[in-house]
Image (cartoon, rainbow, N blue to C red; front, top):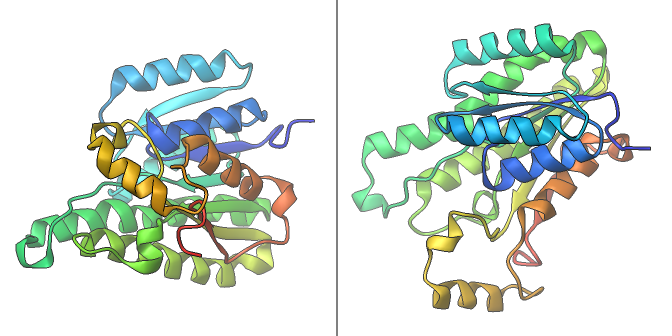
Length: 248
C-alpha cells in the first residue's frame, strides 16, 4: 500500500532541487500532486509529464507564493481540479546573501516576502479547506540556518527562523481539528545550486558533517513523506533537522 494513496498534495517551488525531489517521492507513493513554479515553464512541463506517467494526477501552476491574492486564487484552482488538499508543502524560497553592513533594505524585504510571507499566504489560503475536511498536514521548509543563524545570511536566517515560530503557532491553533503543522530544517543539501560552488569548499563542508556527506533532495523528500503520511499522525509542532548531524 502506498503511503499517500488518495491524498492530494500541493508543493510550492517544485521544478528543481528539494521541491522536485518531494514531488517525485510523493507521486511515487500515490499522491496526486499540484505544484507551483515562478518562471521555469519548460522544467514545469517536463515535471508534470514525468509525474503523470506514474499514474497519478499532476498539474503545475505558475504562481507567486509571495502574493496573497495569487495564493488564494491558486488554492481555489487546485480544489476545483483535485477536489481536496490533504498536504501543503511550503518549499518556495530564495537567498540574497550579504553581510548586514552591505545588505540593502530591498534584499531584506524580498527574502522575507518570498520565504516567510509566502508561508502565511499559502497556509491562510488552505486553512478553510483543511478545517472543513478536519484533517491536513502542513510541512514548512526551514533550514539549519533558521535554527542556528549564519554570517552573511541575516535576512535568510530571519525568514527561516520566522517559519519555525509561525509553524508552532499554527500547530497550537489547528491541532484540535486534526490539522498538523511541522517544520523540516535541511542542512547542506547537494542540488543544482551547490554544483556551482568550489569543490574544495564543498569538500570542507562534507568533512564537517558527522555523516561525511551532503544530503540529497530525496533525503528531505523522505522526511516530508513521513510528515505527510499517517505514520506521523501524532506528530505536530516539531522541527526535524535533516542535516547529517550538523547541529548535534
